[in-house]
Image (cartoon, rainbow, N blue to C red; front, side, top):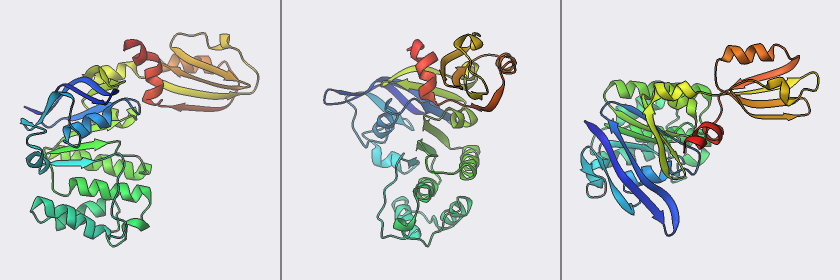
Amino acid sequence: MNIIEIKNLTKYYGKSRGIEDVSFNVEEGEIFGFIGPNGAGKSTTIRTLLALIYPTSGRASIFGKDCIKFAPEIARDVGYLPSEVFYYDKMRVIDLLKYAASFYKKDCSKRIKELAEIMDLELGKRIDDLSFGNKKKVGIVQGLLHEPKLIILDEPTSGLDPLMQQKFFDLLLEENRKGAAILLSSHVLGEVQRLCSRVAIIKDGKIIRLEKMSDLTEHNYKKIRIETKAEIGQGDFAIGGVNNLEIRDRKVSFLFRGNINLILKKLAEVEIINIWIEEPSLEEIFMHYYGKEA
């Protein structure tokens, strides 16, 4: 059974493009990744799904129900975390969460305390005394306090430190084990790779790939930066798999896709002062592989 079904969903803001002919499904019990650069159309798709904005054309359904016609009914079983959270500053955290829980007509007190403990959130603090990261924790607790059947997350980890990100990922996996389907929107490839079984890739408002994560990771890149002791030239990195090579003074950066042992052997031929090997952003990957595929 598909929890989410999106068919040819299109949204224009006047003459400006939002999304065009977006189609994909999220299956029951699935953690589905929705990835692309900032401005690609991820948030527009999600807001249309949640009936926060209306589509220009196309259709979308959640739990088999039309997202526009049955929006209030659908909302009872959906947890949503937007990319940016805004609250009434003068309220205490616990009061805000109790107010949010009142819409679901169920006692969420125990659940709120459990989630606050996991996320290390102080319930007695006022909203305007919280950092951006702690406000994001409030959003996480608010989105999960009613134990939704579908969790929709839009750039959920911005503002969270690495330790809290791990706690959050563990929490999502536990919710998924209990049966919740998850739609995870992000421009950070790493968090999508860790959690998702399938992924839709959006660029310039259009889906350019829909595939299993195992297929996507076959095209994985690494971002490599080095600082060398002596000047080097472009020819020192004439090896297949090297893309976007930049050399400034004695600082070298490039993307590499392929057998990591081959590039390590090439690096061993250079006298290096410092080295950084990172996961590139999706924007950087799109500039190379996905840009060509589009």
